[in-house]
Image (cartoon, rainbow, N blue to C red; front, side, top):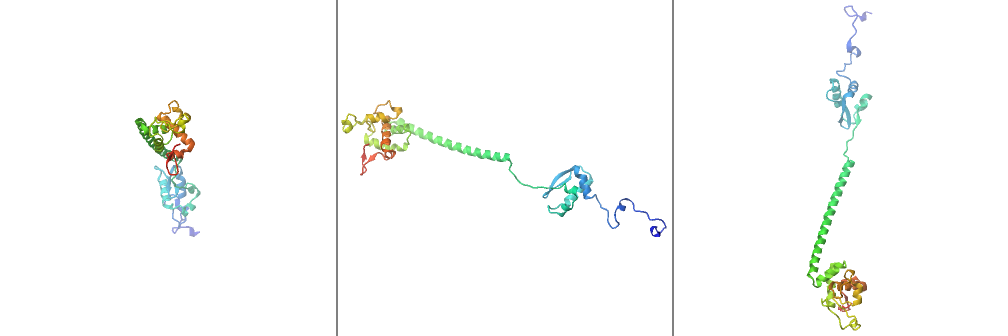
Length: 263
């Protein structure tokens, strides 16, 4: 039993305090353990993104113990693949969660983009419509001036307008008028077969009374056969109905040698 006494003959005292809980060759830790620190800090921590993981770190105002935990985690957690994650106790790993970062367009942003695109399209359509309306107004003003000036060109323009036909037909119609009457609205044919039958051709396009009455535009039905515009509407409608629009576009009928043939 002597081995249990000191050289002075007294029993050796047992180590006291924290030292008695550790082997002599194992130094005591200099700070709180990671497990205890993380668990103790759980109630007063905030989520901070570190790499691709979120570590729960102390918020301002924590004790020195929780601050130490933050330093420990920050120094140790260096990557998503660190073996440190696997080695952490359950209480600590439960406080780490994967975090992904991505840019997404939410529904409100999509709706706003769609609204902007629609607004741009509507503005473009409005501008095109206004440009078309201005073009039509300019053509109308030019046509009104031509009609107001009177004469063959003015009468033709008015007749085509009433018939809702293109003004591009004006040269062709004028060619027919000049061949038929020389541009005289009161011209009467007294020598052809119609004249001999008592129904002479009359007016700018030389229509007989029955043809005029049948083909004159309804809005001018009350006008006489020699009325310039009324006579043109009747002659145009008769020619289209009898020979087709292409004959009108060609400036009337022609023979094999290209000479004009009355209709």
